[in-house]
Length: 288
Image 1: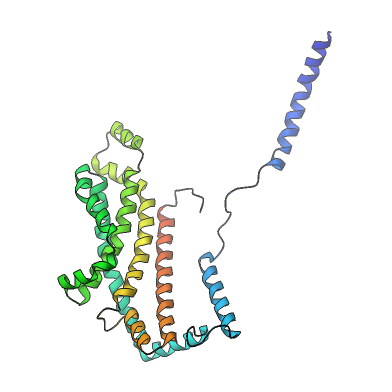
Image 2: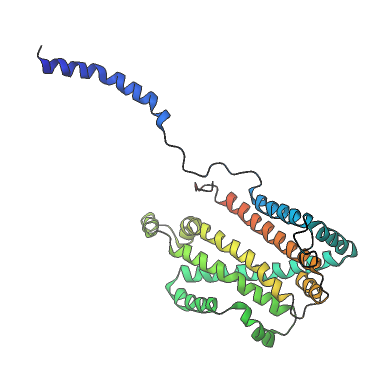
């Protein structure tokens, strides 16, 4: 047997054992995962609780002026007093009604306009430019004009909230519809899908992620606009309560209103995220 044949034979016999050893050592050399990891329990409230703890610590140490920023326990006592007197429940219910009506109108308008503009070139030509122009105009700057058109009552407040809500819903849903891969359209044509089945099986699943982003922005926008609107010729609501407290220098009442607005916004956003997680459970994303 020649030297080359001997080397070939030894290599052939040693290869399987090397492969086995490499397979055993492979898991040890596996790279660390790059994903964020498992979701922490109650992660949404960790940040707010930390801010609350710092606020309480600074108040207890005398680092905050009680007249400007009352301590958390002072704000809590004020909230209890307002609740017992019946003022706070009535104002909260009024604010919830205004925000709900405006949000419902804005959601309906945003979805309808986005579908019309995203599924039709004619609809896009008629709608998209107008919505982009509306987006460029400060919505709160429309308040004087809407007061002249609709009066100083509840109607103009709900209309302004609806405008604030429909714009982000339209923009995100329209972008999601426009971003659907054209290969899916070609596949639907090859499969002979009808227009209705195409929308139900291709368009809606593909656009849902963008829709939920717009929905979260719309929910937050309804509360942000409500803070301003309830200070204009209102006789009830959280914004009215805060405006009255400003006139009397009651910073604790103002903080009660701000905290309730924040809690409402956080709860509504969490509700949308929960629905999104359930509806889009089929997706494998970084957050999941």
